Amino acid sequence: MPAPHWLAKANRAGLNRIIRLIAPWAPGFGVVIHRGRRSGRTYHTPVNVFRRDGGFVVALTYGRESDWVKNVLAAGGCELQTRRNRYELTSPRLYRDDGRQGVPAPVRLALGAISVHDFVALDIARPAASSQGATTVE
Image (cartoon, rainbow, N blue to C red; front, side, top):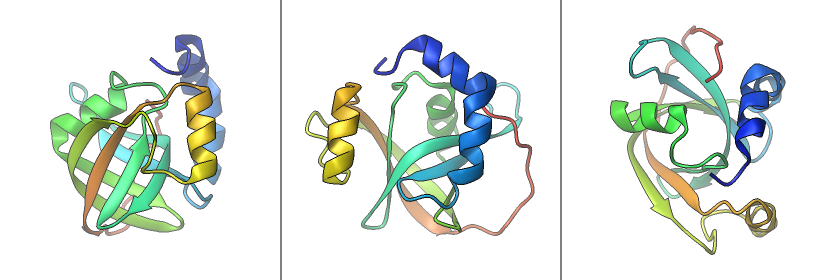
């Protein structure tokens, strides 16, 4: 796991709730809206996300084993709120990129500093309709 486990726990406990307020409009951030595999609950998880042709790439700062990643893979997609827009995303694909080529150069350095090598790419199905959901962070 690139970022320490204790940081992931701290983020779940409080920091994500703050980040979630700025992530929908801040460059390089977004909120993944997904359903729990077992609970069926709706979660809103802030992520580092970057636009690419026909979709987005998300840096897996806490690794491939994060619950939100497992939920998105199991569901075959999710919704993403970023830059004041909402998208329905499909076809999640995990991949490793040691050079972090799918992200802007300054971000490559930051992600390299915390040893992020894993990403998930998703395709845009269509802009998603606005919907109300729970605000729990996983």
